[in-house]
Image (cartoon, rainbow, N blue to C red; front, side, top):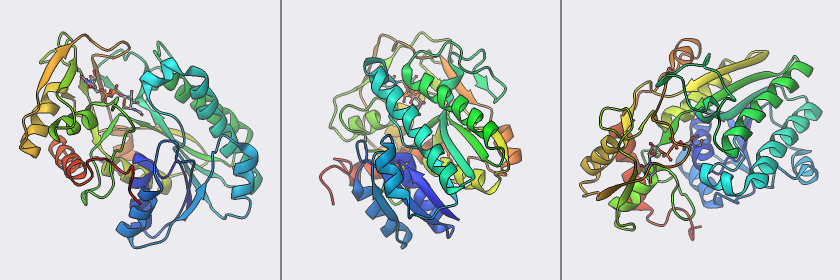
Length: 339
Ligand code: WQD
């Protein structure tokens, strides 16, 4: 297949690119590098030993994207391009709605013009809002009690995609709801490279382990969980990437939703302990007030993806911490200033 990866230079996109290339697919990356780095694409080529077509363009700009893709052949799209910080989305709502929704509208329009029918969308467990139960399957209500523009934009995108598929019945769509992607490629060559202060737990813990930050703030320890700290389903980025390959292989006309998670929950303190064990570093922390909008527990029920996609997460939290530590220690400044 010839797969267009929108936002393909990002954390998730670069790992998907490696997996696709290693499977023999051709990869085209379109990215504006507002939250990623061209060096990631170079490293993907180095890791896979295969070339990537790289298009520097903002997908939210329809004219520029249409021109950039006019003569590019592809038969499938994995759409990842978008802003993804929950906290930032609260302070910059119009940017989030504009970028995340317009980019989706544009790629769908371009696909219609080029008669491309295969579409995998990077959605998120945030569309479930505050879950009714700690373990969540795809039948759980969505678009209810969402607490931030990022989550709303993902939910709105899912609705837009459903409506477009209704108008284009030949469209084959998979909506992949990620739980908590963590870790890095086992080579340590690509990984999560957040700009500024990491919003997410794993990259923050990695920076504390590396000594570039003093300690982890544990956002609350009075949740109804075994040790009182938040519980999440941390899925290794390589398992997540392989889930996209499986979704591509199982596309059919219509819209199908899959949770991509391990089905196992781990608390903040468990992750801190595991990271310390894998890195051999002390990881100081202090308990602070809960973060607004956080839920107590969010764990995927991945049974549908397991059975219908023939895909299952196989890597453990220890694997994720080990690989995240290798990436962090080999790239203390991430990808900025490299290449
Ligand atoms: C995990 C746990 C925090 C930071 C979000 C999005 C999700 C996906 C991943 C994009 C929680 C606690 C965190 C810290 C802490 N993003 N924590 N100290 O909020 O579960 O998920 O990011 O797709 O869609 O919803 O991830 O890593 O921010 O938090 O105690 O410095 O760690 O309270 O319990 P989250 P997270």
